[in-house]
Image 1 (cartoon, rainbow, N blue to C red):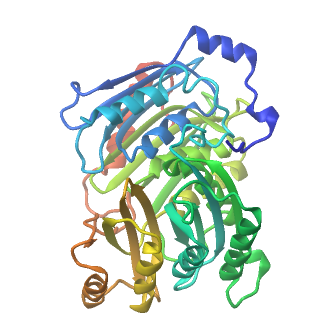
Image 2: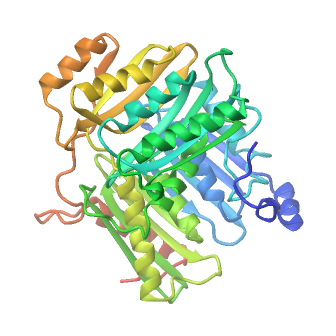
Length: 456
């Protein structure tokens, strides 16, 4: 297991341990209260980072959070999440329900520090070598990375790749193809992998600052990488401002509710996977605590509202603080907006599969903007989002040519939501927007509890 923070950051105060032992987390998975979603209810002693950890567990299980109601005033954390599976159905898989209860129940949330890499634990099925890559994106880059790993006899067990505004960040989990599994132990071989990958990332620019490759050998489970990938993308984003590329329409409003000592954050945008994780992770990394929140994701639009305070128990005190927070949230949402046509690959796994597939993409003029790679037993379950090398939508004839070469029985066009139209909250017409309706409902709920007065 590899620590992600200093030893002092991993230590939890003995008093907090005592409080948690006296008040162990309670998790309820309820399939009876809602006709369309499963309710996950979490009650526990409150500590900084608890909300992020709960959201990460649900995200790692590839669950979609349709609604969430968050309350953590005082010393107690009480949240309700309405979740569905990837197909939009309630949860009936006993293994998934057991993992929720085990991951969020007593003994799981208790002693995890906020800087720890959640899920990077020795209980993983096998040791894997973890490769972190950050660099300037270009057409064919992912194909070159996978080709290097294949030539060096690295079997890619899992990976997640994101591109945004001309940059690329990736986590790649590999095993030793020569031994049939397990991480790579040979330090000379690891050094060679790192050296060649850095060479690929630099490309023709030879700009050493534009490329970064890090390798660690550890027992790890690939789905538990979301916070590390978020941190890599945020660190690579510089000042967090968008560089002018195509982006997801986003409205982020940060208001001062000085009478109650809160800062009010409203987010409205097109819904997408991992949206709530990215906003909560950004708030946590910027050292804000969510005291109350309402999250609604219905149809194509998502609305999130949070009443927050900084860790020093104060609101965002200045206009500069609020603007910095607004920019940080907007950048986090933009970074993982999915562009392109979704292609799903389901077939028997083999060494070199990803190198071959991404090479065919490149030869047909396709560029990968996002990839999620998994291995389930002996099967590969991979999703790629592709555009043309110039960032334009892929034509139907190119898709059919790629499917014919890879195999139309194993490569399918993914049925995803349509592209966004206009920025949410700015539509014409006289109807009330989803955001306004939910904000009214949320404020009424909190007002009736005596927690807020009107902030308008």
